Length: 196
Image (cartoon, rainbow, N blue to C red; front, side, top):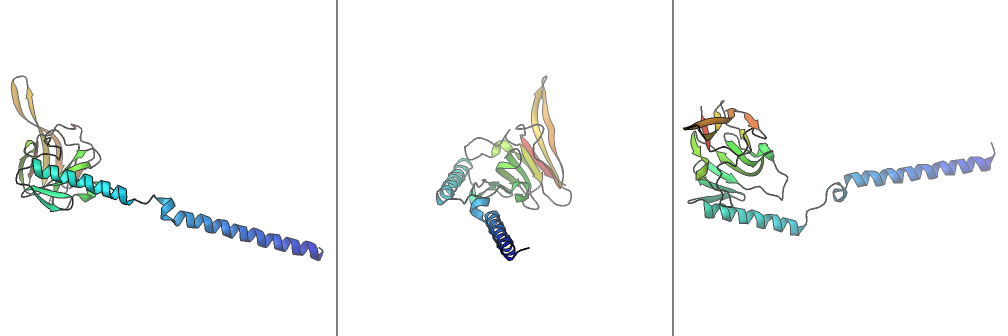
């Protein structure tokens, strides 16, 4: 092997190695870069999300007599009953956002939309609670999570009138912990019951 060929091969190998290192560096930087991995939220979109949430909170306070704001995204309708407004400025937490000790129902399937949280045992007529639009929670439940403790029960019921008779029909529920991301009898619940 002559010296010229050896020098040329060595310099080509070095150039190849350098090019490979540059490519690997660019690729690694691209994967780690948040601007490529996920688009950054703009100040405008954050402002829009905050404005939407404030409108929904104002609607809840207007349509639910005696309601009070107890958090950035939460309104207490009565002791042990709260509504949480979904925030589009963060990733939806889904059922993990239902606090321990509570039974939670969501307006939409997949634990999305507004959420109504119940803490105390009892029967709750959903027609007594309004969404931010003023529409009643009656016939609006699409998913739920019973996150109470000690195996306490949560049951959703529908008022059924059929053939001259009427009564409460059990449509979903179970002992804690229990959840359904899409209830079979979607948008039919009139009553939520919590009991031991």
